[in-house]
Each structure stands twice: as structure tokens, then as C-alpha cells.
Length: 114
Length: 113
Image (cartoon, rainbow over all chains, first blue to last red; front, side):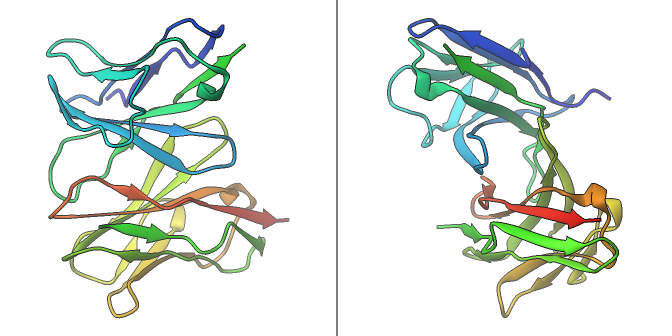
């Protein structure tokens, strides 16, 4: 059984470019979460999605960041016009959405902005 | 609002000694509590959870955690530490009222050979 798959593992962009991070949840999981982690820091919640719906985006910056989880295909975290401060590790997690069930994490995408 | 606190940024333990990583929480209603471990350049790995039942929960790699309702704590423990246990450990909480999981800021565990 494949776990949560994130790609790419490493992504390098120049300032002003767009970054697209992909996440395929575990089989049978319909809930996806995105987190951001800076070096030597904890996880910062960004957004919680179910298929075709954004449930909670309270952690998303108001500008340049968007997320989707279409009916078919992976969840996408999109960062437009990247800046140096966007450099971080971005983690995706999935769960079956049942009460008390843990989230399962991918190995992250490390985004570097030149 | 739900919250979780890990009061120690770093814990150092000699190999073979028992270890404890502390966690306290605040939640409305009954909590669901989790521990995760993160190794370098990897995602978080689920270790164990408390939902209901016995206060002592056993998980992966010999770890266990004790739920203490009166102290609102869920400390992670292991009787005998290994050097390979060195990693970043996260405590997390959710509840039936809010299924969003809130993570602590993490505690870095160093096991000294």
C-alpha cells in the first residue's frame, strides 16, 4: 500500500516564478492537509481539503497561495510569484476523515527560491 | 480553542536510560492525542494515539505514552533509549468537536552514546 506521495521532493524556483506542489493521498483517504515547516521549527497548518472542497484555509496567506483537491488527480498547492521567504519544506498529510484517526504524512517538497 | 504545548525544545538522554518527552494539551471535550516522530529530510511518522480506554498507550519502536486527564498531559516515554531514537518529536491533539489536528512545536531528542 503506497503511502502519501509528494512530488517533486525538491523544487528550485527563481523569484517571481510559480511553484506547484503535488500530493497524492493514501488509498482510501479523502481528506488532505498541507503544512509548512521552516528549518528547526514546527509545523504550520495551511489548508484542509476534501474532494473538490476547501474545508479550512485559515493558515493560508491571503495572496499568492492557493490549493485544490480535484475529483480526479492529486491535490495541488500553488504558489504564484514566489519570494525568498517562501523557501521551506511543504508537507502534505491525508486521513480517512474519521473521528480520532491520525494523519499520515508524505516526505515533503523542499522549495528553494533563488 | 484546542492547543498543545511541548515545554522542552530539546531533551538529552544517555543511551540505555529511560526517556520522557513532555506534552500538555487544552481541548473542549474528550481529547484525541497523538505522537509523531520526524527524522531528517522525512515527513512525520505516526507513533501512537490515545482515543479512549487504558491511560497507557503502547506504540511503535518501544514507545509508550500515558494519558493523565487531571494534569491534561500525554507524556511520551521509553524505558531504555537508543541512539537511533534521536529525532524531532511532535505531540498533537484533536477532538470530536474539531477534527483538525493541532501540533506542538516539537521537541528535539538527543540520545548520547
